[in-house]
Every structure is written in structure tokens, then in C-alpha cells.
Length: 123
Image 1 (cartoon, rainbow, N blue to C red):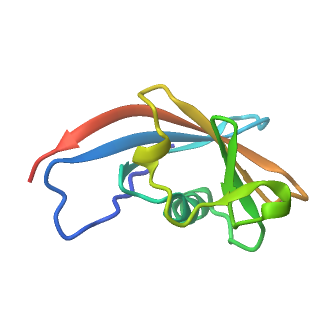
Image 2: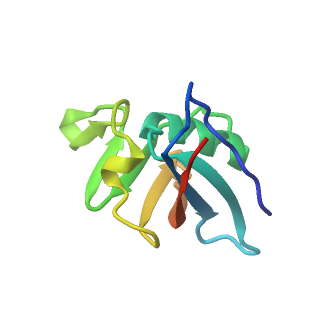
Image 3: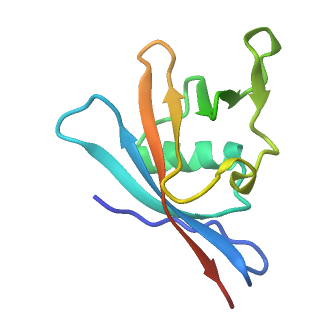
């Protein structure tokens, strides 16, 4: 199943777009979505996008794990950094880069996010 979602800005000239494949892990048959977002998308915004495209209701805690660093709602006692201002361009290293997103720590819905492609758009 494929779905595209664009975050709009006033001007998207010379912006980098990431094509991401979001896969729910340990589920058969596979459940996944393909989206496109601007590199300026924050992790907080990406969380809301994942909630929408995966059909979640945003009732539970979540966390991104990227290159050994956890991002989400700031929890200093658990060493979780704030996701509010961290942009994808700051954490995505290249195409084929993978990171994880966990939703609902009770049920632990684990997602793998793969950067399939980077494209520059000109308007």
C-alpha cells in the first residue's frame, strides 16, 4: 500500500524531499506506508504524520531511536531528547538510512523507517 503526504511550506524551491517507507515490524502480512516529506520536517511533525498514515489515534507515548539517540517528549531521567526542533535533515545521513519509531510502550508497536530516496525539488 502506498500513500504520499506533502508538508507544505511557503516556498519549496530547492528543497530536499525524503521518500520514507514506514514498516510495522513483526507483523504478517507486512503493513507499510510510503510517504514523502520535506527535509525540514521536524521529528515532532513526523510523529503526527506517522500517526495519520498508520491509522493510530495519538493516545500513547512514542519515541524515535536514531543512531543510538532517543527522541520524543523530553524525559531527562530516561535520556530522551526533545523531538520538537530536530529536523530530518539533521539526523538523516543518506539514502538507505534506517531508524525506528515506537508507539505505545505497553503494546510496543515497533516501526522501521527507511529513507528510500532523496530528491531535490525546484519550483
